[in-house]
Image (cartoon, rainbow, N blue to C red; front, side, top):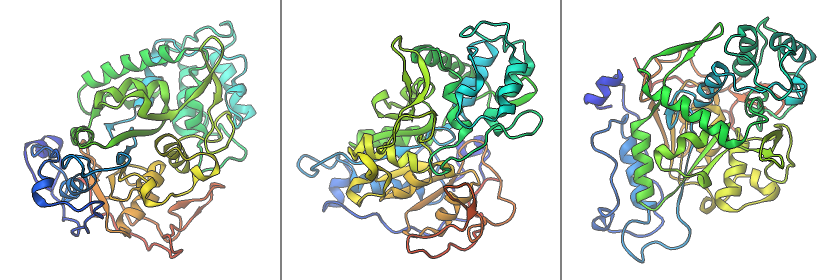
Length: 430
């Protein structure tokens, strides 16, 4: 990794370079002189190892930027996770924190109505902590009621109550949903999407103004108070769009929150995928969420989470509907570039045919696949802002790196069924 001014400012350190990766498949014959017409990634921004060069090669080979008549058919697709990929830090947590601090959560008739997996204890605890004095549908005084704020944010962040007991129980497909993620948009039930987007814009303004490293207090919880667009990712998206790529955001956050941020990198609402709640006749958010791949609307049983991210991208970007949307498609119906940072993103990143870009946040399954580098197209980068140090110990790829649909853990398998051996963490910050 080069150690230019930006790298020094972000505290990045040099680490051993990755093995040079194999070039991506060329989809049309091109002369070197023609490729110079493709837009170039910024020379002022630092990437790890040969990652920038690999990405530029994919842009040159797949982009519709080499002159008239050289590209035919659909535009190439690139897909990006949002939280900790396009931005540093989680924008959903920022929006929830802002809403809790400004009394924007409306009291439900029954907390248990907000999730099919909420335990009776969680329903009872939230009712006691948040009270029943406020009429149903009116704002809860979470800015002053620390007990209510604590229980809500504990469930959101840990899926547990403040006493440590589980907030959710029952059966769900752990490759398609996560109850505490699905629960987040439910907290905004009763509002319009425009209202929630306005709250997210206010949290965005505060987070972008806060210094890097700033934290905030939310009840008894401490969480990040700042966020930044990663300059390298913003530049990559800009370059891809100029090269004729169709760029999508595929997030496990709430649609109304994500929409407040995506315009900052030039991605419109049509190309923003996130959890979308069904609206009532007055345009207000309900507890019901849209389904995918032939699955009906529900209270969160399927969402853009692991395989769900593939399903929604297949539907929206490639027009593949029904059960087939859950399946890995032929190369021509998959993204050229996929970018993420966590196991949540492993399917859309793995599906990419030219570059699997991964920001290292020490997440087991996706890091196992990245370090195994089966097709030579995995690009691991330390986080651009406040990168994590080396993981303590190896990634448990051969034993517990993979989360099964029933939530149990097992080995991470290659496509041929062989087990990926445990991997060392070699691409990281200081």
